[in-house]
Length: 340
Image 1 (cartoon, helix red, strand yellow):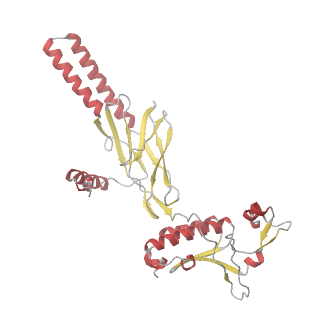
Image 2 (image 1 turned 90 degrees about the vertical axis):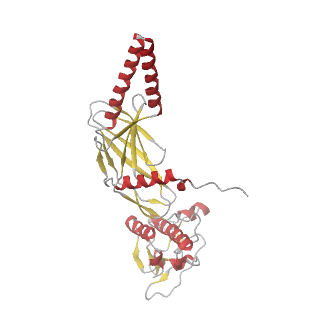
């Protein structure tokens, strides 16, 4: 039997470091725009910087021991260059204003893009500025023009549906010599909404419910179409043409708008056919994934549809705003709502 590796989070040093980072980040203000000043820009030597310092110390000791005038010249020349590089490195990041652009909603499992504008009022170009999600090594590098702006995009992956805080970001530069690292940590205040991941191969849309006073019963079709179809007539709106069927049979057909008026398409947890969906957990997430796919399918077909999630109901409608409302309800649904 193989011995299990120790969890690195149980290492005392890693635990203390993690607790310190949590305490430190909690003290940072939440803001979608920040200007880097002396108070929030930090600097430390890099590995090559420490090696340069050790080399300068050896050169100084050797010059003193052997009374080498050229050794003194070389030592102080390199030291002066390192000091100038430190000031240039610090000023490269100091004074930049970072503005977060409002993140768009995404589906679970997809990378959420974070766009940031870097603004500079300096009369010279700022080189080699990188931006990344704190704790990752996926850097996006750019140069900010003199008295101009540059757009940088980083991404993170939301683990599940719901409303998520944009993670803390870090910006850094090692320009010009790479002997010093100047960085900052920024906590944006924005949040991003993550929809459930739509089911890849959902079943057809559920049968419609007859309107009040309706007498007919809707027929469910294997193609995923909710309403009936008829032969295409000149003057039919293009949104009524069933393009999927036309691609398969080379025959233009249109949806029967009169039949649509007799039925209401309601997307309900009970219609998903997933056992245990009302109890929460994995079945609920699977049902929400199916409902998400149905919402996208109904919107693509231009249908009027409504959504029922336990005690919550979104009235019949169509269009971009209605689709967004339905997806938002799916993203924010909790188990307690499903059990109502």
